[in-house]
Image 1 (cartoon, protein in one colour):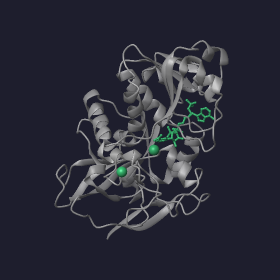
Image 2 (cartoon, helix red, strand yellow):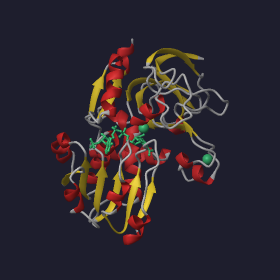
Image 3 (cartoon, helix red, strand yellow):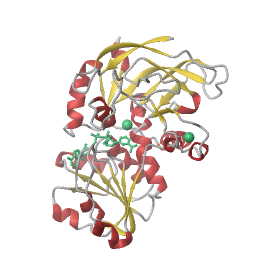
Image 4 (cartoon, protein in one colour):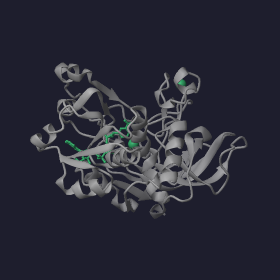
Amino acid sequence: MIPAKGYAVHDATSPLVPYSFERRDPGPKDVVVKIAYSGICHSDIHQARNEWGGSIYPMVPGHEIVGYVTAVGSEVTRFKVGDRAGVGVMVDSCRECDNCKAMAEQYCTQGMVPTYNGRDKDGNILQGGYSDTIVVDERWTYTIAANLDLAAVAPLLCAGITTYSPMRHWKAGKGKKVGVVGLGGLGHMALKFAHSFGAHVVQFTTSESKIADAKKLGADEVVVSKDADAVAKHAGSFDLIVDCVSAPHDLNQYLSLLRLDGTLCLVGLPEVPLPVSPFSLITNRRSLAGSMIGGTAETQEMLDYCAEHNIVSEIELISVDRLAEAYERVVKSDVKYRFVIDMATMA
Ligand code: NAP
Ligand code: ZN
Ligand code: ZN
């Protein structure tokens, strides 16, 4: 076993504290990554605080992981020692079901194996990226081009792929009007991708303080969602709206903005059900959809697209002693636009 250290929560109400544990010895297909940076996703907070239920403790959160390869198994072909590498939200799946064969492992019929807050096939508890090292099968490890700032790449491994995938699936691009709800970690990547793909993008935000940034990040229009009249001006006009909000909010307000055959895709995961009126859906034959991260091939495609188009996340780099402060600020929507932990500060 490989000794590892990180930061863990021991129950739903305690803070992150230093924690020592072990990683498995690398098998023939495994890559050992020394973690340089780890992003803070709102999903880390939902799970650390058991907001979705079923959390497993002690829990080292973190699924936006980047670093450098320190060892590779004998059958690894895509990595060598010293390479940059990324790890995201999942680390394994059954590999045999139709969805896995189609490289949509996040929808594995047996359930994908999450990076943390889950167990590997032998029943061992898995731990995430707020740590110094991780061992992952090559298929779930991604190459990162040298031209991108490594710390700012970390959020691409979850916030990036989670927004890239639905934008591609519903063909956000030239001639399409696309909305993004919530300008946090996911929202700002949704905005960057929709803009980069050539769509007309409207950012919805509850935070007036984010209007100028939204425009800089690529929004053609910004609407403060508390202003019902400003929202209603866009009624029946969107092809696609990607909802990145982490807390309960009114979906019917956004459904009413969809044109004929438009889609509201949820990626945000508030902990309670959100009421939907059937009347919001039958008008304009609207669709309400959801999307979960992206498969391994699409994640690599997204990272390669970002390298080609020079896209990274807007980050605030923090030391490990600021974890509690970062969590509180994310919950208060006071994040511009992703906290990334410098794991070197753990030493
Ligand atoms: P985040 O950085 O905290 O961003 C969420 C944003 O939602 C906030 O910045 C805020 O934006 C807006 N918001 C917050 N509370 C609100 C409220 N009460 N009403 C309206 N808007 C509100 O979170 P994140 O890391 O981007 O994650 C967003 C959600 O996606 C989380 O629930 C997370 O668990 C989920 N997630 C899902 C997947 C997936 O595979 N589907 C992957 C990763 C994360 P404004 O200030 O602009 O209003
Ligand atoms: Zn995430
Ligand atoms: Zn499968």
